[in-house]
Image 1: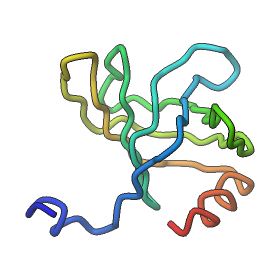
Image 2: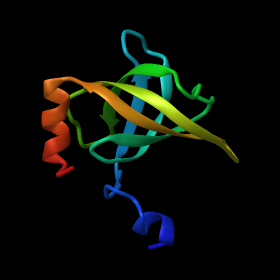
Image 3: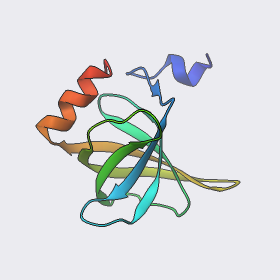
Image 4: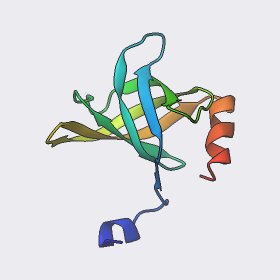
Length: 108
């Protein structure tokens, strides 16, 4: 564990399955969930999210394991260019009760 992780307020839960993020109300894929904690999340995106903008997101797990859709509003705090796209750090600003229940089941 590096020094940056030691200084973080909340433990990041790495995502083992494929959880994809879409804009709510459309089939526009935003990216893939990399990790999550009780206040925020990290997305791997083909296109950059705009810092300070709030995104209405819907997450769904693909593959053999399924989960209910999670919908939440997240504010992009930062983005960094990667070899194959961007990493975008977001703050959860609003979350539905059902989504919060699913996150609690993940022991966040």
